[in-house]
Image 1 (tube, helix red, strand yellow):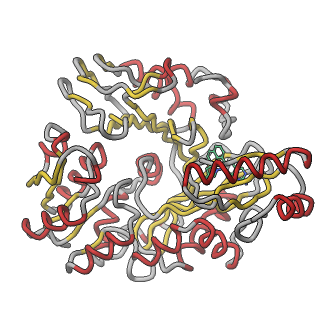
Image 2 (cartoon, protein in one colour; image 1 turned 180 degrees about the horizontal axis):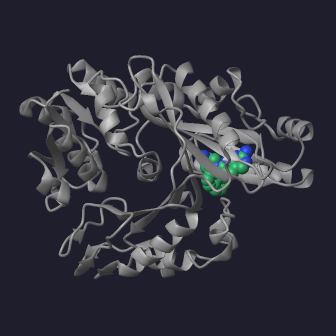
Image 3 (cartoon, helix red, strand yellow; image 1 turned 90 degrees about the vertical axis):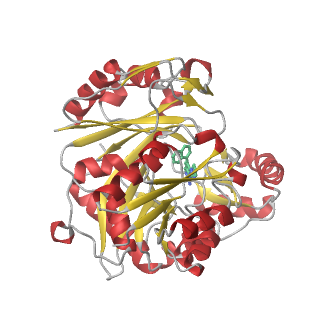
Length: 448
Ligand code: MV4
């Protein structure tokens, strides 16, 4: 194992990585922007380097400042966390070109999965189910109409340059196709400077189910079961759970194998997540692969009794996955993560930065809080609004829900608005209690 790691991130994930490194005997160098000098990661790190002003373009996205900090402090490895440079193949190459260890997948794998249509074509070639779709861009409404007749309505128009749900349009009948097509093209042009669109059969009310994978440099690849991330608002996840209420052992095995086929095909190494849509009939379709550790990784850690960040560090150091003997993993109990954002759920989830005047965190059995904030901390307006993740574990889903309610009731955050009130209301919705959650859950149950 290397002995010094630079963490090129901020917030709760920087704290998470400092902790994993310390338990492995690895010293941490945390880089931070001028807006983040008071964050917990800076307090907990072995060494810190200020890399620039608040705007991320001048700090957390600044290749030269980050790699310069690593060289000057003698860090042998760089962990990018999630967001920022985590899926930037050019940065991964720059790290390697400077003879440092990149704690992430090979840059070639980042690139293969980074382009949505290449990723889709790759998966479909190796027999992983994808939603029936046009092969590549559709340039005019007549071609779109031919496709729609072939696969049948409803269809979904997607922007080639899109992502995160931007520039998508549903079409439910032939009469609406031409105007929707033209509108989607011009929307895509305005939003991305690229008007290219492609078509897919619409999967009605799908669930978002994703498989966590790990692959080491010795040819071992494992999946760590699934997370259900169906509860999202405008493509921002609010709550994630593991296992998915919709999977049984047989479907878990089939989705796990599909995810591992993807891993092998792109010679993946490290931690990653393969995202699927799951329809009401139990059919699943590959959507995309995230070539990084994700915000919601703790629910997987809870039900598999693993430490995904430590595994990333071990894999990067050339060690094998530490729990190979336990494969195939089955989830034990149930875990739920509540994202606590500095946002006002009563005002369209508007960001609410400011000073936390009072903070009391929940505790007790089965409760984990991953956060970089504390009483007196000022949440800067500059970055995303996640201030804490409340993660609970229970012997089954009902116990996890009861524990979640208990922990949310213990949580006190004053001085700023947070999404905790949204979660308390959510836990009272019958459909949620029954595990009946699809991606339109929030609109359907009018929770914002
Ligand atoms: C879909 C879909 C239904 N059918 N594709 C949204 C983000 C983008 N990455 C993929 N998305 C979707 N693609 C087909 N063919 C529904 C969604 C979708 C969605 C997916 C996952 C989680 C939340 C979502 C919310 C709305 C729509």
